Image 1 (cartoon, one colour):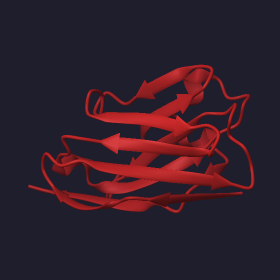
Image 2: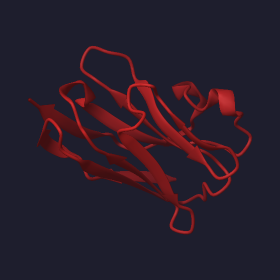
Image 3: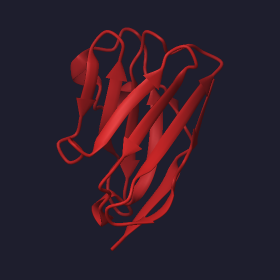
Length: 125
């Protein structure tokens, strides 16, 4: 199983970026796919999750600015990030869960078995 993330980069405050994460080797159609991020010196934190059965879930820090979406046929998850701020600077990771995951576990990194390689997003003022 492989999750391949792409789309990161360096931008200025107020800019937009779109991250993509394509999964292969396993279907995540009935499982949540999720974005986490980790800033230097900080723990990995939940950003957004989406499952077909339970819908969206966002961290408070990104609500109204980030949008998660999926191409279920293509086994891909996206993260559209707008109004980026320096505090969004981090390495972003996509993760694939299992169909048995409960909604309350979506923000928990240890609940996920499959991870992408991480992609850097840098926002400068």
